[in-house]
Every structure is written in C-alpha cells, then in structure tokens.
Amino acid sequence: MKRTVFRNRWLPYALVAPQLVVTIVFFFWPAFDSLRLSLYRASPFGDRLIFIGSGNFARLLGDPAYFRSVATSFAFSLVVTFVGLALALLLASLANARIRGLAVYRTLLLWPYGIAPAVAGVIWLFVFHPSFGVLPYVLSFVTAYQFNWFLKGWVALTLIVVAAIWKQFGYNLAFYLAGLQAIPGSVLEAASVDGADPIRKFFAITFPLLSPVTFFLFTLNMTFSFFDTFGLVHAVTQGGPGDATSILVYRAWKDGFDGLQLGYSAAQSVILMLLVVALTAVQFRYAEKKVTY
Amino acid sequence: MAIGGHVTGAEVVASADLARGVPVTRAPRVTDWRGPIAHAILIASVVVLAFPLYYAFVISTQTLSEVTSLPPKLVPSTHMLENYADAWTRAKMGRLLLNSAIVALAVAFGKIVISLLSAFAIVYFNFRGKQIVFWMIFITLMLPVPVRIVSTYQVVSVLGWVDTYWGLTVPLMASATGTFLFRQYYQTIPDSLAEAAQLDGAGPLRFLWSILLPLSTANIAALFVILFVYGWNDYLWPLMVTNSPEMRTAVIGIDSLIPRTSQLPEWNVAMAAAMMVLLPPVAVIVLMQRWFVKGLIESEK
Image (cartoon, rainbow over all chains, first blue to last red; front, side, top):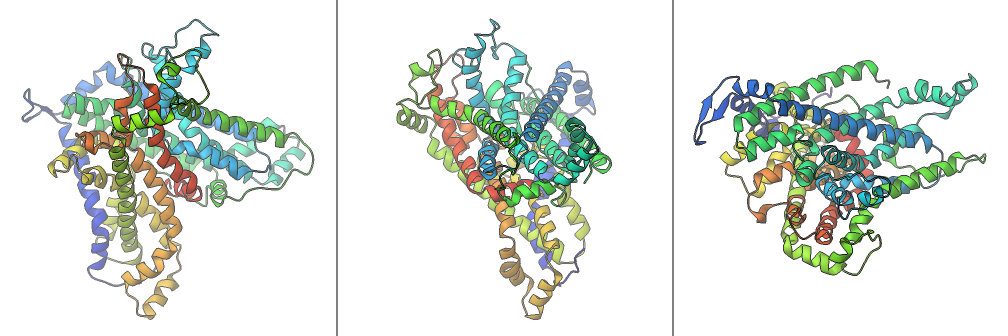
C-alpha cells in the first residue's frame, strides 16, 4: 500500500467521477435491471410487463433447446481452448531451439489476433463453401461425403471451431515458445543426467513450469470462445443449421432482440452471470492449488 | 476482458521475455537437428496461418467466373481494383470505416483517460468511501458486456443514445481493465517522487500531468493497442445499438455483401470488403507489436 501523499477534499471525487458514473449507468443499472426483468414477461401487445416470478427460469429449465445451447457452448469453448492450446504446446515444444529470426516469426504469428471473429468467419465460410471453396474441393478427392455446412450441423460447428482456433493459434504458439525459451537449460540437463527420457522430462518439469503461461492462455481462450465468438456465429451460421451453432450468448441475443422476449432473454443473462461468477470462483481455486509459479 | 485471474506480470516470466522482444541470435554450437526442425515447424505454422488470408486476397482480385470455377484458382488475377471499388460503393465502405475508426479511437482514448484519472485518485488520495469505489469499479472485471445485453440496450434507449456515437462508445468504457493496469503501475512508482513534487510546490494535477503521465507512456500505448482492436472488432454491441446504415460499423456493415444462397455468388466483392475491414487492426498490431504483447499480458491480470 502506498503512503498517501496528496490532500484534497473534493479532487479525488472529481477524479473517480467519470469512471464511477459510467460504471453505475452501464454496469450496475443494467445488471440489476436484468435481475428485475427476468421476473417479468411482456404483455401480448408488448406495452407493459407482467410479473411472473420464476416463470422464465422454469421455462428455461424445461426447454431442451436451452440445454442444447448450454452443451454447444461448453463443447465449443472447451474444444477451441484445448485443441488450440494442445496443438500450440506440441508445436512450440518441437520448435524450442535457439534459432535466428524469432522476432520475425513472432510478427508472422501474432497478426491474426487483429482480425475480427466475424471477418475470420467470413473468410473460413468461403474456404468451406460447398460449391466453390477449396476445402470441400480437396476433400472431394478423398471421400464422396458432402461437407455441406448449410445442411450438416457438425460441419457448421467444425467451421466455426476452425475459424476460432485459427484466430487464436498464432499467439498461443508465440506465448508457449517464449515460455519454453525462458526455462533454464540447466534444469532439464539435470533431469537428463538423472536418466529421465524426453516425455518424462516434459511432464515432470516443462509442463509444470509452464503452468502460468497455460493458465493465462486458458483464461484468454475461454473468455474469447465463450463471449467474443458471437460475431462469428451471427455473421456465418446464424446459429444454424437448426440450432447446431446456437451458443448461449447468441441465444440470449436472439430471444431478446429477434423474438422480443425481454424477460426470457434477461433470465438467460442472469444464468450467464451466475455461470461466469462460478467459473471465476473455480478459476481462483484452481489458480491457488495447482499453478506453480 | 478478463473474467478475473491470478496471473501477474512477474509470474508470467516467460511472457515478459516475449514482451521485451529480445531476439535470440546465438547459433547452435553443436550441429544438431533441433534448429532445422524448429525452422521447419515455424515456417509451416506461419504458412498455414497465412493461407486463409492469402486465399481471401486472391479471391478479392478475381472475376466472378474465376471465383466460381473449379478447380479453385489460387493465384491473383486482374480484377482487384474493380472489386474494391465495387465493395466501396455498394456497402458505403467509406462511412463504415470512418465509424469504426471513430468508435475504436473514442473507446481507446476515453477508457485510457477515465482509468488514468480514477487510478490516480485511488492510489494517491485517501478519501471517504474509497473502499466502496474501489470494489464498485473492480467488480466490473467479472461480467463482460454480453451477459447483460438486453438491459444495457434499454438503458441506452432511455438515454436516447440509440444510433449515436455516444451509444456506440460510452457503454464499452464500463470496465476496469485500464484502471487495474494503471493502479498496478502507479504502485510501483517510488513515493519519493510525489514527495519531491510536493516540496517543489507542485499540486496533484501538476504531478499527474508532468510526472505520472510521461512515465506511463508505455502502459498507455499497450492499452491503446488492445482497446483499439477491441473497439474496431466488437460486433454484438454495435449490432444492437445501431438501426440506420449510416451508423453501422465496418465489421457489421460487410454482412450485406456476403452472398446468401439465393444470391449471385459475388465472393470477390465480399472478400475485397473483408480485406479493407481487417487491415487497420492488423496494421496496428504489427506496427505496435511490442506494446501489443505487453497490453495483452497486463490487461489480463
């Protein structure tokens, strides 16, 4: 804690005022309003709100489509995060050597972070395009199966997973590479002297020492794939075909803005909030127990 | 941006090394295979990452008949200028890009200014209610915008800010990432600096302007890159808060150019628009790379 050195009766309030006003108006007010709205539904003409207590939540919990969205969201985020990180770690481990030009490689790896998820989606949409895309064309030599994401849910899901991993992959690799290069060679040499083989060395030494990097990348990738992929889904698949790619944020938006079911959408927001709070708690516990710094 | 987290700069030792950007130029002393393998893997990764962008660029230079021909043509063609001009006029790209630039810059500068000020108050003053203010600001780290979409829209609509630049930008500033970053940084600045300033008769604002601000440039640059990219690329909020085509941002505006099933497959025009939209944030990252890595680490703390 810093020794406070300035004295002024009103200045500190003036300094925090802009941030505080923005926080109250655009954070606390909407958050509490979501809580309140989740207990109402709009009247048939949409002109007033009718109190229905826990009705929206009961409806959500009885809706198989909502549970499909929960499953889709978690499967999507976990696959994007785990596949993305595992692949990055594997390649970084194989590429971990003292070589020239690392700064150049880093530049060539980091740029996709700047591409909007929606734009990444549009590019991959064409790569996957059933009639003109290069990927279905190449695959047509291997199999007669039609990789048409307009019709097949799992192809659509694969499309957005690939686009999301693509966007994140470069900096995952760059961070893992930097993490590996920071591990002192003497530690690994000592293990070699003790007769540990490369795979044992990796799991006993390298992976635990990398845990801060893994934890950092895990948080970043989970947040990204849970929330920031809305644009990807909206621009590319619109949740379909069917509801194969309706992630939770997309469903909350669709019910609220397309369907104008404000209370129903607010109830989904409330569940999302609880989910985020729970995940944050889990994350803190995990951080305290497992991560070696 | 972050849900929360425990990782601090010192702890991500490795990433700090990345931030410093020290190129390792020592060649291997013993001839072994690790060097060539490393180059091969990195080159392969770079090529695979770049391919979709290259493909999109190639498509943006082709004629409609080339786009729809099989096998796909993977070399640039002659129609680049026509396609870009077509995209520019059809989607009114000038206006869209201007809107995106205004939003990205306003979000970046607005958030930097309000968080510089509030962090200064929290670190350098003692005032009644400081703890409450502190927690009110930092709890926002927990809940990103998408979890309170409908209600935030209603607040903006009550204020009459729908379809305005105010509505597009100010709600995106309600997050503590910047405040947190500057607070961390101010706490590492020696007390003696502020004491010396006081002895010289400098008031708090003078100290902030002449000493703290120049010391914070690296942090400001780091935050700028992250926020610019965030503001430019954000999709959900501008989609909700704008109705008229004139107020749309670029990432949303190009939606109208994506050929749907029943339309002429003018992917060349759509890709030309995509290239124009992705260029500014990618350029900011490449040109300000050092601060980008710093910002990525610091804003996630």
